Image (spheres, rainbow, N blue to C red):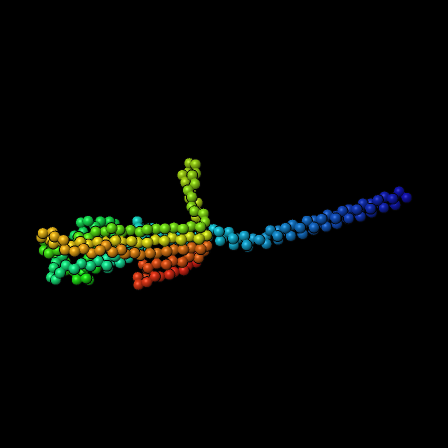
Length: 244
């Protein structure tokens, strides 16, 4: 009788153990399923998150300032100088030799401007002497303007310099929703002619104004440019680019 009772007790213990094991297995299965579901839910937004991070971190850098001045700046100034010089003209009379006096013409781009003024006067019929003493007329030229105006418009967050202790300053990146940058080259020249011997006034060319322009605009990741200095210089050129 006692042996039968003991056998029944062992049987119940085994059954309880088996039930407990099954319960543990079921619980482990449920936990594993929930963990898998959570991992799947976590992985679902990963492609969109990565794409957004790439869009925010992407940038385009144009190296425009290796030399002291960019080619675009030089084109703006030289184009304005060409257009101002084209309008210079003097009536010095027939068979008169002139000497170009450039003593009052100075500036970083003066050599190019003087050359284009000389070229324009030659096209208009002026004859130049190689030496001042051989000239009948002195043509004195001067520059009222030979530079660039720049205007910027920004819709977004400009760049700031943040002071970092013991490390100097850190420049934050510029975040532009819309940005417009306008550059205008302006040149103003004048020429006065007087007699080489007695210095009396002969004539003067009204100060002409030459202009050139370049406009860059950026809207989010698309940029476009209008200018009249690139290409053949015979009209306005437009370029549209995509900047990721």
